[in-house]
Amino acid sequence: SKILFDGQIIDRDNLVDIEDRGYQFGDGVYEVIGVYEGRPFMMDEHLHRLKRSAGEIQLNLPFSLEEFRRQLNQLVKANHLDEGIIYLQVTRGAASRWHEFPGRGVRPKVTAYTRAEERMTQVEDQGGHAVLTEDIRWLRCDIKTLNLLPNVLAKQKAVENGAVEAILHRGDTVTEASASNVFIVKNGELFTHPANNYILNGITRQKVLEICRKINIPVHEQTYTVDELLAADEVFVTATKSDIIPILEVDGNQIGSGKPGATTGQILKQFRSLIHELVHT
Ligand code: PLP
Image: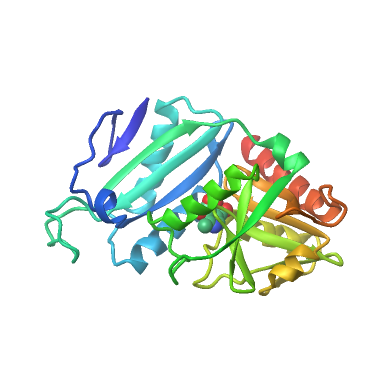
């Protein structure tokens, strides 16, 4: 398949410099953009978040967002991608290995590739289980950086326990999950952790909040505890491409009726109609 490398669409090859700062320090930022029937979903929102993440680590993007958009659309076409994702990352570039930023002559490295991936409608409809694990990440989880080791360890624990996600908590407070945001429904109202330094403000999360305002589901961007999570009527997680997944059990504790909830179902239906609109306009 083809990849995007420094602004050019080329064949995939082993092109990473062993002293690339992404490779050695995780010194870079990334985005994952969903593609539905050949159409990238909410690409502008993802690119704006990339720009923000880059700014927070003092990395100047080497292309305008306009130019990124053009190149990524070209990549999707070159790979004839129908269903899947675009992975885009920008590292601080390759330079002799010293912790401090390299000199001005070192250009950030932009790479992107696509991966074909079926839609996850089955797990979105049927739901899955989650495990709980302590959130051991740093205090800038709002930046989408390449440093994902705590997320990797958390997701591994989920998979080893037959769960779809690991829900993270800092002490008593639920923050998010290893690769998704967490919502609970109590008495018809929605709660999710506020978008601050403790979570990544998911693009899917933001869309879900917008949907709730539109269909008059009260939303509270407010913290809640592990006990409140376990006592919720419904729990769901949101992320790019897996959209909305109902969580039916957390660490062996059944949530609500143990079936995907009505409020979650309503939101999922609205979310799918947004995708349908994208694909058919
Ligand atoms: N939280 C974390 C830690 C993530 O890695 C992700 C990305 O998949 C999300 C939340 C969800 O963000 P988005 O909806 O933008 O994919």
